[in-house]
Each structure stands twice: as structure tokens, then as C-alpha cells.
Image 1 (cartoon, rainbow, N blue to C red):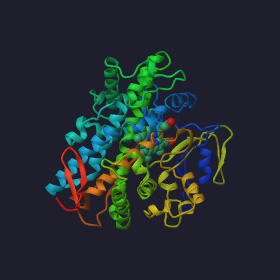
Image 2: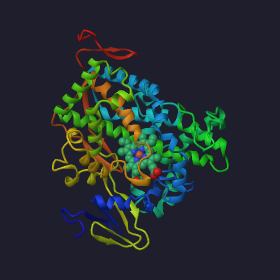
Image 3: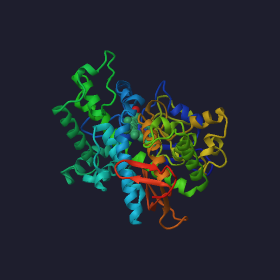
Image 4: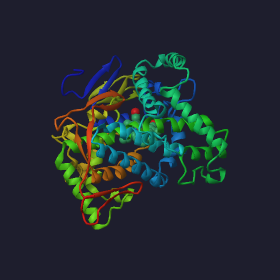
Length: 466
Ligand code: HEM
């Protein structure tokens, strides 16, 4: 029965299964008696170093490190970055303005990758990488993140070969200019800079071990932990946290931003309703420029658009496999012996019609609004975009922060037309991150907005055009 149409279990490798079953998700990603991540994740870590928070398979070690550094991802820490993110928004709006005025077509997804990498550089290392400013992939960083993801997706199929292949690849690219090796170099430089000019110190670490320094970037906070306890929290531990933030925190957000824009362009009714909401908030005086996180969370339709985009377009497109423990497990009515790898792919789960409705393959933000609290809980329980349980995405607030602030500014001030007309389709490439190609658009200024160089874009008081 494996692989039959409509069957919830598909064998994707001799010892590996992909499952679509909400009850199985509760078992596979449970908190008590946690299941180990499959060794395939090891290929996303440096074989000679300790693994990182994302690739680690050791349950105890991972739980300890995750607990210790959860403060990095608290709202209070993240919202302190709003001014820096606003500056990046400003930069992007300036770029869009120039594109609008030149009438040149552009690949919108590239701009979102520049923005998201600069944003995560700011949050994790204290400074943007400068991609937006350069309007290009500075030093091949974007390419490196993509190679990192692709390498793990391919080599992870044979994780036992990872140490050898990684060594060979490093020899062939001795400057480490691409992939994980390069990301680690960037990280090492940031850590070294912080050592010369350290951020917060020991005093910033509370007796509980938690860092109390909102407004500091990740490396400086992790440095504080290192300063407080150098033997137990080493430089390797700093890398343990920063590598997945850069490697996993930029492409995913950029991909989601592109998807939101694509679905909105393709669904004019949703675009119209979202702009109506934003303009109504502007008229009421409850939407400033730049838009604050708080204001964006009060825009119900905007939040529904973001959530529906994440459902329709999860950033990660492979199953998230776990190792079946001693004694085996029964999942979706079938027994799996110990050692089998079983996972759920968000691109399957999020389209399950019994959970999300018969129109699960349609972009319909109203799904999250015109329904009962009970139905929302059912959908939330099987919303797999960020994974589930003890290994769920630690950074999931960040896309809500970035997209919630940026999307309204873009939509209020610009029109985006598909360069080859409404029937234009993009191409998707799945190498763990599901990337887009062919998202060529033309940008137009929206009537009634005044674009102010360096000071943001504001609506004209009289609603007139510039
Ligand atoms: C839309 C954006 C994002 C998506 C769709 C996403 C998705 C995911 C998924 C599916 C996992 C779990 C993988 C698994 O169990 O196999 C994960 C883990 C993780 N993500 Fe994200 N992510 C996003 C943004 C971010 C950001 C912005 C950061 C940090 C800056 C981040 C940091 C992490 C970390 C550290 C883990 C590993 C957590 C652990 O194992 O304890 N992610 N992410």
C-alpha cells in the first residue's frame, strides 16, 4: 500500500517514510520521550566541530543548550531591533522607488533575500551584511546559504559520507568561499570582533543564567554567557546558536515574503481586502510609518495573510524525519520497527483537506478569520511550517516581526505587476528550502503616496499624487 494515492504513508527510501496524519504528528514530535532527529540533519553541521542547535541529534545536549539560550528569541529581545529593521525597510523602499521610476523589471525575490539576510545580520551579529545597500549578493553570502541548504539536503541522504565529502569540498574551495565553511568563517569573524570589542559583560547575566540585555545582538548576548561561564559555554557554543540563525533564518523569511507577495498578486480579492484594512488603519491614525510590530499585530487580515502564506508555502520542503525508538511505534495504523526513519512534510500536512478544508489548495486568508476557535485549534495543531514539539523553530517570531512590518509598507506604496502578465508562473526548487525562480515583476508607485528620500514614504495629506 506504500505510496498509493490517498494513502497517508509513503515510503521514500528503503528505511524512510513520509506520513500525513495529525495523530502521528503528536507522537513523532512529542515532548516526553522525545524521538531523536534522523542522522540526515548531521550534514547541516561541521563534522569536526560540535553540531549546531538545528543539526544536533543528541537530545540531552540539545535540550540543555536550547533552554539556556531561549531568551535570544523572546519578543522583548526581538522588538528592540525595530529601529534597525526600519532602516532596512527604508533602504528597500528607496530601491523600489528607483525601480518604479526606471520602469525596469526586477526579480522581487532577490530583494527579499537581500533584506532578510541584512535583517538577520543585524539581529544575530549586530550589523547588516550590506546586501541591500550594494543591491547585490555581497561576498556571495546569499549563494553560501543556498549551498549550505542544498549540501545538507543531498549529502544528508548518506550522512556517513558527510565527514569525507565535507573535507573534500573544503579542499576544493580552500577559501571556504561557499556553503557552511564560509558561514562559519563569517561567524568566527563576528565572534573575534566581539572579543576585541565585547558587547555586554558578565554583569548582564542574571543569577538564573539568563541574559538581561535587550537591544543586544545574539553574538553579544552569547558572549555574555561565555564571559559568565567560559568553561561551560565556549566559543563553539556561540557558533552552535549563530550558525542556524544565519543559515536558517534568512532564506526562510525571504521565501515567505516572496510567497506572500505572489499569492496576493494572484488573488486580487485578498490584495484589495488587505489594502483596505491598512488604509482604514491609516485613516484612524493607528498605522504609522514605519509600521510598528504592535500595529501590525492589530491588523487581523494582515496576520491572516501571513499565516495563510506560511500554510500554503512552508519554507522547508522535505519531511522532518525522526528515528523510531526501541520497541517500535504504531503510526497511522501501521507498525514501524525501531530504527525506521519517519517524518512529516509540511507541504503535505498543510494541504490536508480534512484539517484545512476541501479548498486547502486555495490561498484564502479568511480561513483563519471566518471560523470557530475550535477549527483554528485543529488547524494550528497540524500547521507544520515551523515543525513541532521540542525541535520546533526557535526563530518563528522573527518572520512575523519582519513581514508584519515590511509588507504593509510595500503594499501601501507600490503596485507589483507580474512582468509577463497575470498568467505568469514561477518555478520552485526544493533543496530543503523551497526557492522561487522567475518572480519577475514591474514596480509602480501607487497614486496618492509621497515618497520621501531618506525619511520614508508617507501618504499625502490631500490624497493627491506627487
Ligand atoms: C518563515 C521562516 C522560518 C521557517 C518556515 C522556519 C522553519 C523551521 C523548521 C521547520 C524547523 C524545524 C525543523 C525540524 O524539526 O526538522 C526550524 C528549526 C529552527 N529554526 Fe526556523 N524557520 C524560520 C525562521 C527562522 C529564523 C528567522 C530563525 C533564527 C533567526 C530560525 C531558527 C531556527 C532554529 C535555531 C531551529 C532549530 C531549533 C531546534 O532544533 O531546537 N528559524 N525552523
